[in-house]
Image 1: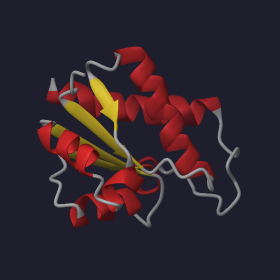
Image 2: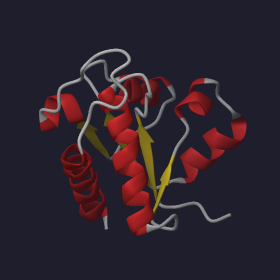
Image 3: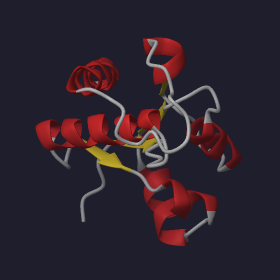
Image 4: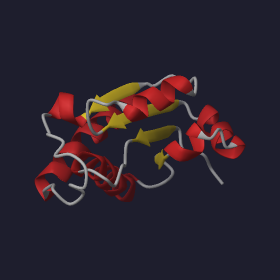
Length: 128
């Protein structure tokens, strides 16, 4: 298994539109760039300090943290895990994409996915 240089630590919460949107956009970017370029990390594994996941994350050169709302859960988990993030994006604060609240999972558009994907891709390009 080759570890990508860039890890995406993303909100990916399926309970809200903004969390689902971060996941969808990053999966689309992963499809575009490939697994050798970027990898999506596991928030639950980091919270639970799963040794293999912690080892993998610490081998990565760059960690990009993408949050879906102002709660900044992914950023807080990164900090509590002792991770240094290279770039940070909060789609609610930085891109103006409003979180609709609990159980708004499917309330986003393809334009929103494209907007988030472009913003994350821009961060990846800055690194390369």
